[in-house]
Image (cartoon, rainbow, N blue to C red; front, side):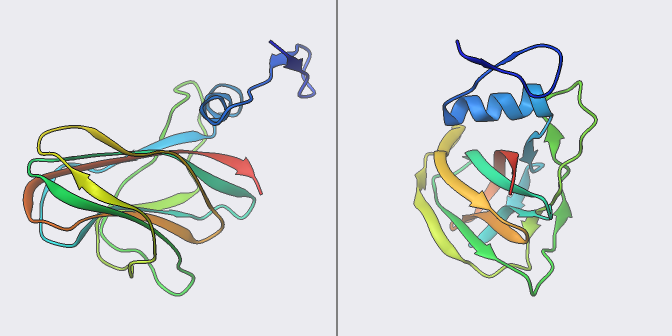
Length: 171
């Protein structure tokens, strides 16, 4: 494995794939995070979870999105640049994947989000009932300052869970 020296006293491995960039951001930099909503009873066309990058120095790279619902539903993943609105809903705190790091996510995340307008559709499809389903793995979506990624469920259900996993890289 190739190594590089990041200005520290010992060489560290070079990570070359998208999966490994997430790993590097977690292990080396403490800049990989996940956002998950608490389950709730959702209505049709609900934005289950939205994450807005608020970092002025780093882009937020979306690595994975996982969805679960108690009923088969259509899922829409969309992204928009939202300089003119404040996302609203139940606050979701990003969890640092490097549990030894004290870094916090430079993002605003809301569950049962009500302030966004559906942006560019990145992915659309259906998920089966009662399965944790990866709906977006390795999409390559990069959020600049104030960009938002959101996940909508289009059918009514009693249980909705979404997890968005991403990492920061210097802009």
